[in-house]
Image (cartoon, rainbow, N blue to C red):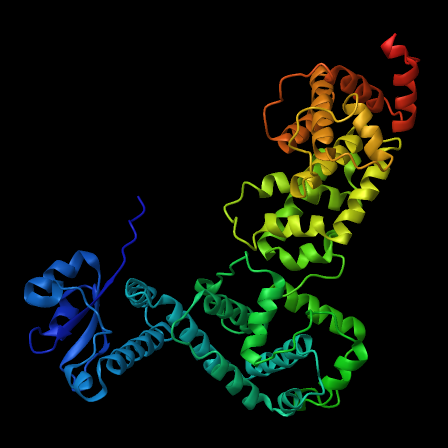
Length: 507
């Protein structure tokens, strides 16, 4: 049977109360004297396996009290004041924890320091200090790669390579670049959410440079957009005029690289620069290639990295289940239909994904897409494409409602007449409601066909995401319209057949 994992505890032990060396010898490796925690050597930090903790506490009456190494010494409070004394004690503890975690101590000992730091609410500050320490302790080859990556990252973010600050940065040698990075990474007070993201970003850059891997710092918050990640990186460089990562001019960036002592006599090809940018982007999540997933740039810049990844998963899954839809032009239509799923996400803030989609729908680019989709809807389409096109039209109006979409009644004679008027450029105000009634008619037709169109029916039910309304007597004509469209007819042909009653299906 596998043994249950145990988490060692860290306690403070006064040297005069316990024969520590004897305890260690008798504990069968269940106690470890880690280090002195008092300048005069009267107290030690001791890591103890939980099963042996009670025995230590019996020998030292105060050992069972919670150990808080961030409490300042009385003498320090008297000299420095409470605020500065607390800060100094906190820094002293964090440095001790960094020294142990960066040492050759056993994993259990390091975990004891991590766990106590987390209990003290200082885990984020500890992670940043560990990152800085790892940078300092890196091999010469790692430091050189890191410095080169810093130059390339800087040039991909700084819009003006001719500025005085850019010239100073480009003239810096390896040591100056590393020192500048460590200075920029010094933990601020208070340590906010953005700082946690910065730690993960520059841990990724260190690992990209073949530096030390620390899985504890693989904590990318994927609700950050690629643009926000770029801005956080730029903050460390003190860049104010930021450009989109990866959108560089080959000649300009090559010329700028040649000014750095790290690239003397070196010429990088356009292909090499592009590959470098792609690798860095993949590690740091600071941008997407132009036209990524064939999505609008406003969406790529407004969605969190994780949201883009989720949409990519949805694309793959949809195209696997519905191969007839698999073409790049449909990506934006699926993006529109995705708004139904997005509306159920937990992130509903002012800059959440649904808000980004709604703002895009109101933009000129969004409206132009809506007009194009409405035009394509009038032509011959497969059942799958017809379903997606109609779903996209409805989803657009869910994001950007028409002014009479609240009405349950047709504006003209019936919903099909409303549809025809809308498609011919007459703004009657209920385009969203018309699309919804047609989609419910389509759902009824698909339901009647059994499993022949099971996948597309399930897709449509997900988009509609509500119980069908009570069938209106006007829906009979909608059902006939949809039935004809599913047989491959265009909108114009369908309207002629409905008007003149020439359809064999209707006789």
